[in-house]
Structures are given as C-alpha cells and as structure tokens.
Image (cartoon, helix red, strand yellow):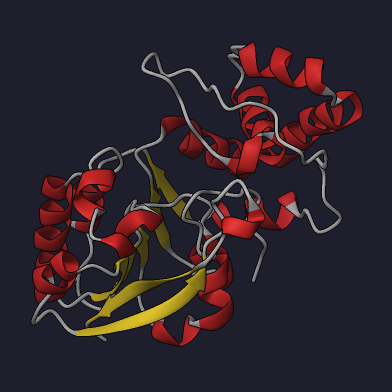
Length: 265
C-alpha cells in the first residue's frame, strides 16, 4: 500500500479506506482506464497492471517517475525551496520540454493550486490559481517505492474502450469514469456533459459488458442516479455507498453524498 503522489478530483482514497472489500483478492492483470491519482492501484499494488488515462500530462508524469524518480524529486526540491505566489505563477506559465521537469511541474502545481484541481482552458493551458496549501514535499513521499510499483505496468494515454477491450479471463478492471457531485439533484446529465458525456457512459457500459462476457472481474464506481442504475440493470450487484464531498471551496458547504459501486464479482 502506497500513498498517491497526486490529489485528483474524484480521487478514491476514501474508497480504499472504507470499501476495499469490493475488490477481488486474486486476479491476473489489473486494468485501470481512468487512472487519475491511482488510489486503488497504489492500495492493491498488483504485480501486473495496465494503467491508462486520456490526460497525456498525467501519464507522462507517471512514466517520468517510473523511469527516473530521482530526477523528478530533484526538480521538486527546487520548487519546494522557491515556492511563493510569484514563483507559482511563473512555473504555471512555463512550458518545459524535459519529461522530468514536466512531471515535477505537474506535481508542484497539483500540490499548491486551488483545491488540487486539474483544469485547462480551450488551448490546453493549465489555468488554476494558487491555493492555500504551501507544502510541496511531504514526509511520506516515497517516489522510489512508487517507481518500483510502476516498473511492471503499462502506462497508456488511450481511450478507455481500447484499454478495457484487452481485459479477459481472470483479469480485474476497476473503472472510475468522471462524474460530478451534482448527480444527487437530478441534474446529472446536464452537469455531467462537460466531463463525460452520456454517449461516453453508453460506450463504457458496452465495453464493460464485453469484458464481463470474456471472463473479467469488474468493479465500477459511478454516479448514484437512476440513469446509471437503469443502464447497469442485470450487470451484477449495485450498491449505494456514502462519502463526504471535498470539492466545495468552502468547507462548510461540503456535505455527504452517495455513489454507486457496480460489480459482477
């Protein structure tokens, strides 16, 4: 078990802390097509894994740590020593080329930006303002162990359908598509279209059905909404679980919410 090195919107640290019992104990290969912070991967630490995300900067950061974690840490220490508001915006506006400088930049911005968000504008430029957190390096950072855990992993910048289509008999797929905390108020479709369209949800369901038919074990996190319950009717067990939302800017507005875990195990 390792701590993820990123904070990511929709991250599942809370899930592995409270609901890890949904995950199978034994499986062949592990597939995670919506990697994000990789909380489930870092908790399970499978010996063989296919990890993917549509975000190229994210996957490049994972590859950089896997290939040369010392270089990434060296640049992170520079950010740690120089961190202040003017420095934050200078790094945010920079466009490094080296994969290790780019990885350190992403981690630095993730740890010090507003609410740990990853957001880019229409030109693909990261535009999140500085947040209140000033810690760049944590005592429990273990990039060496993270690099070791990633050595036997395929790290892919690909669409989820291509990744899941590779899963077969005895493999385990954990799918955690993007969805908003607005889903508890009947505006799920309206708000979710900006993150993960309904057509994407339909494609995901079809792809997971295919993996299930090939003998893969599936665990899916998704919105607690009637449209999702209907979409996965007959797929397997659907369980409503509770969590505390951490995305609201004002901590007083952070309330409990529910999500669904759908599994064929």
